[in-house]
Length: 324
Ligand SMILES: [Zn+2]
Image (cartoon, rainbow, N blue to C red; front, side, top):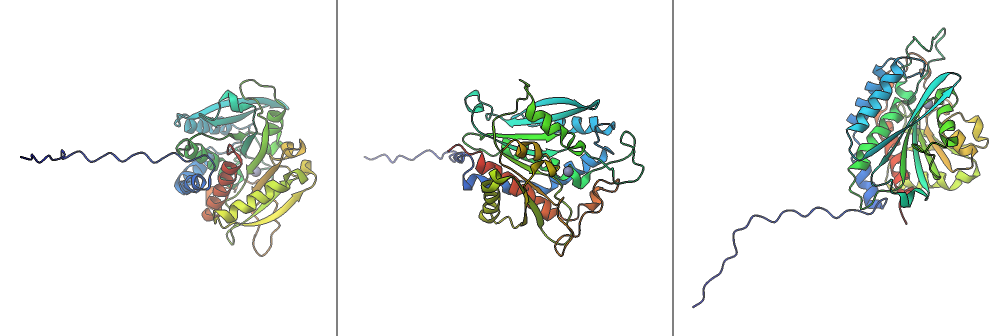
């Protein structure tokens, strides 16, 4: 006699977790940039602009720091440190973030990728503007880039890579005072927030205003940045991000007053994505509101451009930070 055996009507097998993806591979990059959330970008930009001003002489500046730290504190994998400096009596605070387990001591000595955005603001193009009292909402310059960095922290923490790469997110202060925050960080001997041996710097600054085209300047710093420039262009193609990039060569890095300047001057391959240096032309009307009290959230007229800039910056960084 044969007894029929039946397999137990079982609980359906649990879906196995998807295998982790190797950090910085095409598959990983595609997945990571796909989850950059435009609603989060918008929320952060509006919050940052709501503090009135992020000039380091204005009370809103401390609110902006508190906001950035609060958002990062909600991401358990984010390891946050501060680098402080003083410029002409003005305290500046840079906020540096790694995503665990990216901060293993065994990789600290290797090349790191710095992804930077300045969070401070200014409105010196408004006549009679007073730094300590008057608004400098800085929605485009540079709440757009700052929002992207906050979103990167969330995306990196959830990107399920087998091992994290070597990325530092830097929220720089004092860029509007001629990149004093980033320059001091690069020269710092701080133990808490050391300037890692950076192999590449990718900076995102002012990327939400261009009502007529998805065009940004790709500024590269010195001939040592040639290959990095080409990498950014290749990434734009590879992931069909769709930005129209205008190449601008910063032959004297010190003259291009962005947070890439100190790094480019130090010989580190560096690029910035920005509308900042674009002359008004058939593809760019020029943002007449930047550095005025009118750089407000309603001026962020091209959310698509902003999202593309956010994707290109992160995709480039992920590829560069891959362990070979
Ligand atoms: Zn800026």
